Image 1 (cartoon, one colour):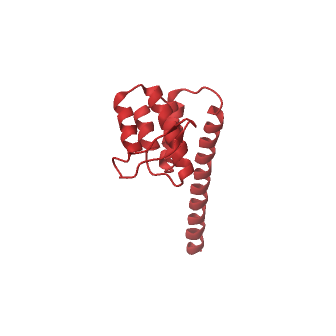
Image 2: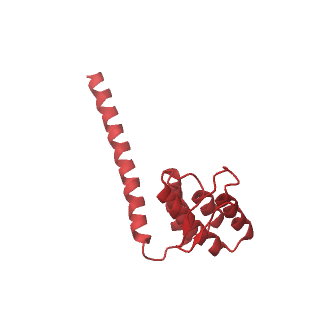
Image 3: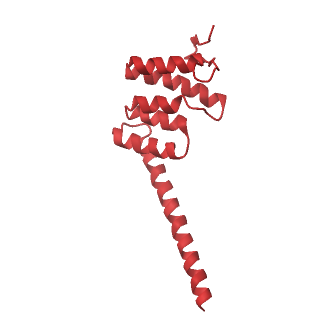
Length: 137
């Protein structure tokens, strides 16, 4: 009987943890759905950014940090290594928007160094807004 109680106790704890995790994910999802397409306050955007940062989704973390006006943090995520070249291209487009909104020379220089490959010896060659191509000559 004691072994049965112990097993039941473990099962209940695992179920509670599982439901707690689902509840957390559901609340984050609701928050994202609520703020998409409408204005939210910077704290809400930053909460979503922190969630995506924890998920190692640097593109979405950068996007929501930018919406929260945390431009330095946004750029830090947008210029990290991304899982695909498509996401990297979207991140660079968003990073250009970010430094435009930030109007900060230091952040502009960080992005230029990233695009020129100064940190990893790999220049980034992407079309930006279908008008510009950045290459290292």
